[in-house]
Amino acid sequence: MIYFDKVSKVYAGTTALHDITLTIEPKEFVSLVGHSGAGKTTLLKMILVEERPTRGSVFFESLALNKLSKKDINKVRRRIGTVFQDFRLLPNMTAYENIAFAMEASGRADEEIHTDVPHVLELVDLTEKADNFPHQLSGGEKQRVAIARAIVNQPDIIIADEPTGNLDPISTYEIVQILKKINDLGTTVILTTHNKGVVESVGGRVITMDNGKIARDDKHGKYAL
Amino acid sequence: MKIFKFAPLIRKSFMIWTKVKRIARSGFVNFWRNGFVSLSAVLVMIVTLFTIGSVVFLGAILSSTLQSLKDKVDINVYFVTSAPEEDILAIQEKIEALPEVKSVEYVSREQALENFKERHKDEQLTLQALEELDENPLGANLNIKANDPSHYESIAGFLESDNVLSGAGARIVDNVNFSRNRLAIDRLSKIIDSADKVGFGVSILLIVLSIIITFNTIRLTLYISRDEISVMQLVGASYRYIRGPFVISGVMYGFVAGIITLILFYPLTYWFREVSENFLAGFNLFEYYIANFGQMFLLIAGAGIVVGGISSYLAVRRYLKL
Image 1: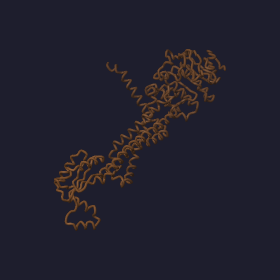
Image 2: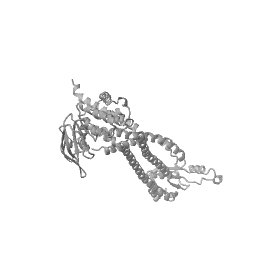
Image 3: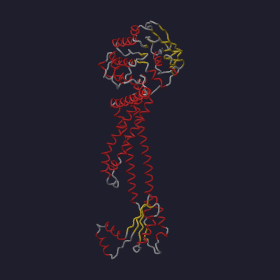
Image 4: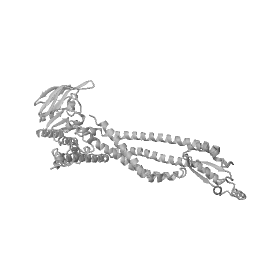
């Protein structure tokens, strides 16, 4: 589903990614671990076309992301749900509107929005907070809104960059359970984390990165740093 | 069924309508929820639009004042008391034929006497002295107005050429007062000229400056939203879909600022009329504003909408990376 072919990324002299070749299959739950600066986030940015490789190619199914025109980037992003450590919600929109925005941006009809948004809000157990603004929500609640937003367009893949980095253990547990549930329903999930407990409770494939290279790639790996 | 052929087209135009509706709605919501940011943008835009409006008013005041000054400049040809009226009228006709001349007014001897009495009605002594005379001591005169102050020179030249003013041999002209006014007339033409140029230059400068300030303010308001813009991009919103609401908000800043400016001008021009009545030669700014309200509305609100919209459009572009 995602395929990196000898991808390197150089930022002003420093090499963030070094000759990465990697395949991610559909319905996989991949945990990406490694020290800060190991290249995890750069790797994810390649999939989101936030960054383009200096050398090599990135494919999303048969689509060459490194050759994608600016205009078509948003079409790829609609097929990818994103969750970040800092939540990245739109501050002037309520929880409901944040989720609805992702659907509106993809050009979905109003009727769909009216049925789907309450549905995903229920899925992340936030029905009561639908009309709250982000600043009125706790960290865990914000992250659940972000996940709801990520899944509402039924993406092919969910990218979660340190989603539990700012959360307490209970919220962390909840978020991991939700991500596992999404994966069970057939969506590919790529998760980066520093949290050993998270990796172990997920229990899927673990890719360990170090210095812009893939140090280990274990089918049923453990957190090993 | 033919309708099926059009179904995709109908669906597409329906989609466009939905998008327009959503963009407009979130533009309004942005404006409202970012209350403080909107307020500051509106305030800055009021300054801009106020400057533009003031330039228009200043232009109107200047041109009306200059007009009334110009109207005061003239050339008088005084005739001797024995000049026959038909000769004077013949000369009037000749002068009126000149392209530079706007009007020639004939003041008869009787009229001149009336004017004199009117002007000196509080001076008993002068009037008494006048009574003493058997005959009207005043001659008739022609009052000449040119289309433009710079034309007086050539009109005077024309009058000075002998054959014009020397009716049927005998000299009937007493005096032409142009030479006496000449210095004042020349100076006035120059002042009028440079006031026009300087005024225009300063106006353009002020307008450009205030537009730049507005542009920067709107860029700052969008700088606050730059994270928001990148989130929208990550969620898969197209450029147009992101830009639309910001442009709508910009247009709203301009429109609201325009309305407030137009309202502010109402008491201000009224007040200005009170203070300026004495030295503005009867020019009424308030009436001018009311009479030209339609044009002022289009200018101020239009300028607000255009400046606000374009500023937002350009500013969002800056923060739409990738």
